[in-house]
Image (cartoon, rainbow, N blue to C red; front, side):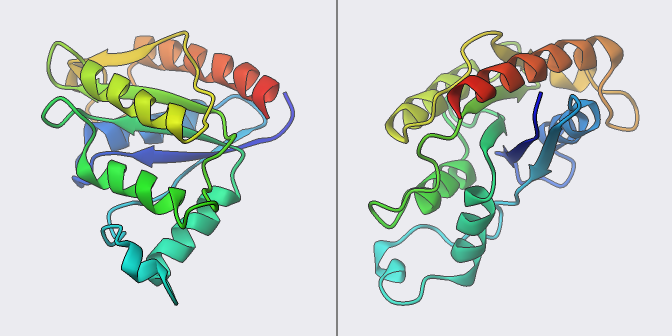
Length: 183
């Protein structure tokens, strides 16, 4: 595989987030040639078109540049109230504006949802995919990545347990192939 620079966005802002642990685990098992960088979204002001007229907030500009510099995006998210967390939706909005200058268009994407519950963030995963269709992001369909009871998939230090690392390694390999075809 040639070099693939991937942005990773984590929907949970909690310091001890399981989703953040999964994202860090992805970094540790990334296949050769793939580099994953977690791009923070917690400090992005809520999108307001008025702020984009003139000089947008520095956090928006830095975020847009960080995403634009990457070839692909992996989203790792929990489910809040049967949808994506507000911070993640805001990041999508910030990156898609101003109109005609979206940083998302054409970037291959993958979605991994993780939850302490039994349904593994299924609704958030699919809700996010709806937005990605509009943002013109071809999205990996298989293997699907839903991590139910994620707290049991991590070791005492927050690392991926072997079976979880094996599964997510397969996801990353498939994503690398998918991204190469969709760049």
